[in-house]
Length: 287
Image 1 (spheres, rainbow, N blue to C red):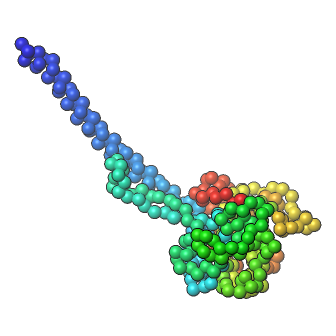
Image 2 (cartoon, helix red, strand yellow):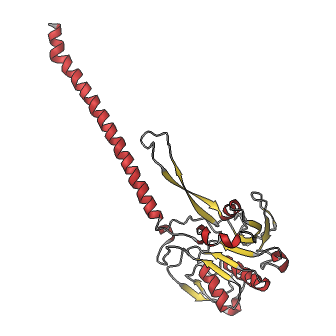
Image 3 (tube, rainbow, N blue to C red):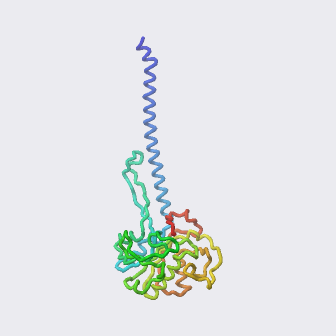
């Protein structure tokens, strides 16, 4: 009697339980396969997107590194002078993604990158806010030594706004890489002008690594009047001028007849219609 009850009632329950376990196991395998497939698609989409994303001048190292090797280099840079470094991570512990290579993106300062490539950087010229961006607006930037790289820091924001012949005497070339915001009153473009002027007088070439203008899609505001010219506004351009730092360099060199040996490493795949958040360029606060 008891055996009959077991066969009629308990045994079917056991069979049902086993079937559920098998079903769950099958679904788990299906889910794992599905998750792996989704991750692969995401990775492929990301890599495809990276091929069409904005390439700042600094990331096109093959275009300017040969001009720096074997030279005594000065660099005008600040906290915005970063490049994108793409790598891969594999062998993750999560069983659902094990065996996959995941693309990683990190950002590295241009100075650190150049030092890794054995570029002989002699000094860094620091604009307003300093090399590391830690100085307040309007505050004098002091000469000094960068604690991370031990490189000499030469201030371009204080009593000295234009590199002196003595400060350029031990240099063969200057590289300029700073993110601008597209506003006339940002002093980075005034520093660019003075650096180009000093280098023209010393016979030193300048390489400008271009970056997107986050306000490059429009032009607005009055043109600066000559009577109001100062370090906060040196050029007769609108308040919102629409140009990149590289385009400004070319304009200064031509219109102001600076005459420096200038090369601009232009942006790749950038359109003036793009908003900054439509690009993959890291946004580092410029001030």
